[in-house]
Length: 186
Image (cartoon, rainbow, N blue to C red; front, top):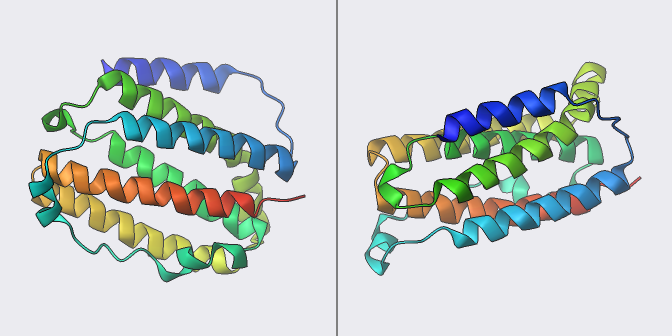
């Protein structure tokens, strides 16, 4: 059911003729609102008992993420887009062991996709201009970080505790996303 609704959503967004603006202030407002919705939706997902805390790992969030204020807006766009894409990909994996509501996950995926859709034209323009510095190395570090999250889920066979650990990581990621989004100014 998730994939059917996801396909409908993708088709709807692909065929929409939305005029996109490079107004970073507008983008910052839209991204902040959407990130807050995502945090709220993640908070609605049931977590598991205390014993899952033993399953925690240090996934080593890239060091650059602690210095979000140092990113230029072009770099921030690249990093935000990569994070959203990776989170989206993780949440499309097998979460059946969690008891999470498919509706909440679908709503979360719709929000993530909407954020990526708003960022994509600017992200493509930045990539074409090769107008980035810190963002490209940070993206590589992020890919490794998210690869580790996926490997962790797979090694734990997508069990409930593993998903709880990853959910906490994703919630933390939204704190980073909010800081990066704050740097988007005209």
